[in-house]
Length: 486
Image (cartoon, rainbow, N blue to C red; front, side, top):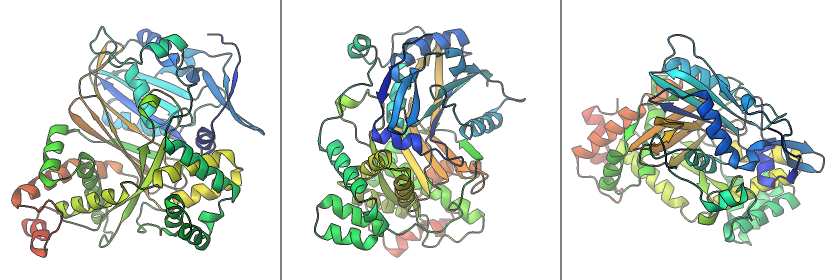
């Protein structure tokens, strides 16, 4: 494949993700798809050539220069370098696949060519497995899931399940559109300019940030909140991460049961799932002899800032909120209500716009400013947690039915844990990524996700819980009396 060389300036936000790579935390989004049937390599490459490379960005490599970063078309692009065959050691089961994915997540993509790669394991569990690695500078998780879905069919022989339509075919690409409309994007860019102008002083000096917030808008008030926000509890998940990573995934939960339980308790699907995550982490800490009373684990949760018209663009268009997970609460219903209250408190928050502005400042400013802002953002949290709703019907890729799919997003700074939740075909899939130095056995945490949901379900059936979340001590003691939380 020979392409004429072209250059295109990279956005400040995408530049921030490009610069954020560290040996101990690579800015790589990784996904795993499992199939019922064996996938043919030639068929897969043709599919990627015709649908994935419809996005012109994926034929470009990222280049950093004194005047800023830009995209450059790879004149020597060779699809064979990007779609490769891999084999697992015997017995080639889930453990071997998890170890292989763990190695890939810690292996950098070559900056000399477009930073993405597909690894096909043609024989896995009676079918196939496909691992996709894409650098975060190309797009955020929401956009990449949409890209992957555009490659799928509604049946083994088509038609396409989620085509992008005429605009993609007419232009040959969809990643050169205008910035998204609305106030979110412009407000975030204004914040980025302010932080860039002041050299990050607002976040480096809480006193200045609070003074600025007192006489400013809701957005500057959010800067003050962030500047004086303390770190979360000092658990074993905080520390200096190393290069080696570990991934694990759990058997899926039925989405219908999660919805039913949420309706019974007046909570969202996200509330239910995150409370189960908090419970699984709690059990892991208890099992290691760690104190959990009063412990809070703070997570960075991505928030999609794309408009409907912007849904099919590449690039990074998301903000972040800081969510406190109440690890110290044993009663699963009480814990769920606490998660719900924390989520409700974030509704209408300016945090996502502020976070987008931080990323813009990182990419537009000098590296020293990026380091300062990244540390200010990452030291206040211990994990990144994402929840992406996927299609609720079976999909096919290269003629093979997708049995399950999961993904992991990278962690910035010294954050050493990532939790990914993805719904597909009536199920909810959990994925966990940890730093081996901080948590060498994520399978022990992920194994608790299902049991935590069952405990929440049984506890819900044992009493009539007030939907407003107000519990008296007798209700909060139900779990301890029944022994469900052990």
